[in-house]
Length: 132
Image (cartoon, rainbow, N blue to C red; front, top):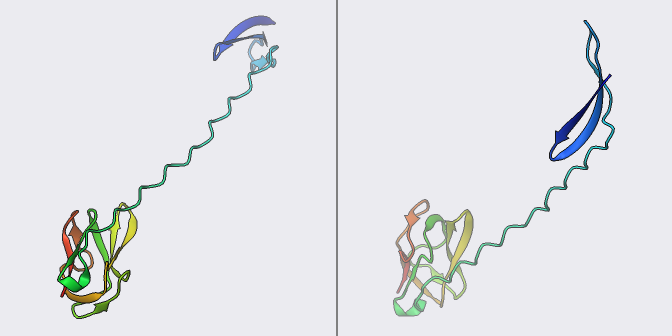
């Protein structure tokens, strides 16, 4: 039987090994206890995404318009020219950063035109809806 000192991760262990001729090698458990594994650090929750800024709008009854608050894709258009809308009605759903963002009417009014269609890509400030 031979004794060896083996270093594992900076710790020394004394082991004994029997030599077998013409057969398999047999080993004996280490004399020193193995170190306990280190616990993985607790996962940290990602910070919530900042809320989308409110779209730039003019009052709907004054010939105003609504523009895109951020770049994204038009997911759904919920109004058409001639529709009457009230303050707070959802006009368009804009997908940006894998989130659906509702674009609201700022005041009561009538939709004059819808400048985008579903699937369109828009940039920040692009015109979406105009009012009479």
